[in-house]
Amino acid sequence: MKTTSVRLAVAGAAALALTLTPALAGAAPGRPGEPRFSEGADGAGDPYFPLAGNGGIDVLHYDLDLTYQLPDPAPAPLEGQLDGVATIQLRATQDLDRFNLDLRGLTATKVVVNGKSMRFDQVENELRISPRPKLKTGTEATVEVTYGGTTTRPRDIEGALYGWVTTRDGAMVVSEPEGSATWFPVSDHPTDKATYDYEITVPEGSVAVANGLLVDQETAGGWTTWTWDAPDPMAAYLATATVGDFELDTYTAANGTPIIDAVDPALPDSASASLALTSDMLVFFEEAFGPYPFNSYGAIVDDDSVGYALETQTRSFFSRNAREGTVAHELAHQWMGDHVSPGRWADIWLNEGWATYASWMWSEEQGRATAQENFDDVMTIPADDDFWAVVVSDPGPLCLFCGPIYDRGAATLHALRVEIGDDAFFELAQTWVEQYGGGTATTADFRALAGQVSGLDLEDFFDVWLDTPEKPTTW
Ligand SMILES: [Zn+2]
Image 1 (cartoon, rainbow, N blue to C red):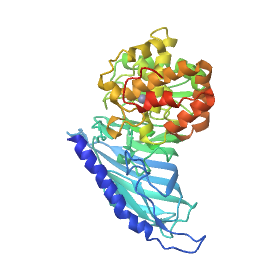
Image 2 (cartoon, rainbow, N blue to C red):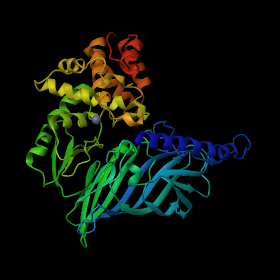
Image 3 (cartoon, rainbow, N blue to C red):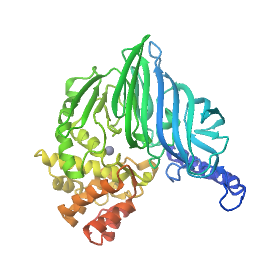
Image 4 (tube, rainbow, N blue to C red):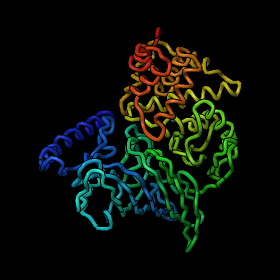
């Protein structure tokens, strides 16, 4: 039933795109060199999530000024009150008479563009803004959106909690793949990376933990404002502003990276014991993937659960327990997924395959199962098992986080390592991060770079491992 409703939603989106086409086609022709103003598309063009992200704009920076509180006592079902002012620097990538931001379940009350109030409306999860004067290609604009509403516990297309997830003591904020729209107006697709800063005001005693470095903390009148600076380009799904009871632990890792861990004091010490390995892991993964790409790192370990961990940029999120293998997995994502992000959601195996493979490498480094043994373990899965029926390079939006994306993805990388040798494999990993870091890349980019670095024709290899819904036997 879930599948059916999803398919209908996608078909509906396609129909909507069609109805918008005449407006685009009807834009004033103009003389050569003159602006041709039209509407920015309502999505970034990703077939898995047609309305995620937006056309015609490139967001450069989000300044998120949030105020959040829960009623006391916390109601059932859990609800909070979120009010925000998002100040967004963006650049027009086409001549725009209207553009969209994604905003879901919250109400915009005022939109100001370059200091002037503007007309806007909200249709489903799209906030549509008509700037006057219109924006010519290449123009930068400051867009200030005042918004707010009641927060709940939203779910993604697969039914998993995500976005601004209200908890008894605050909120867990983890938004993969397109849940950031549940807490701020956003161009919610990885291809539109931006820098962020946050001022998060919460009742005194609550802690707000976001990406990057904590630069200020001020308490007045029963409220505390937490100011965080995240200057490294970031995909929207990796942004967080988690709120709750947290103890902050700050130190410098062996590689020089400032670490800020936030652990819920309601948890036993064992829940966060593996975080002590972060410093050693940073050194180990720098050897494999190159210099750590961001200004800081750390973890959030909350006593509520979304049912998974997430590699929120510079500050990985863990539900109730940060296990060693997961700590390695989320840290490796900082290079593979966060610094180099998927160009389309179909490329998700590049995130999960690399992070899973990195945890195999860490296991081997610690004298436990080797990468080869983990690979052999995957290959014991019988050929008629459904595990092998997923096309890893195009799993569909309901299978972004299926087991094979992780384990067959990692097995693909191990088979590639054996095929091209350690020198070429790690040269490939580091070149990948250097070449695409700060942006996005696709499976086609990875195949091309692997061929280039190794000097081998790997097309049959990748066809067998990534494109064929069968257990690889020869490659
Ligand atoms: Zn992962």
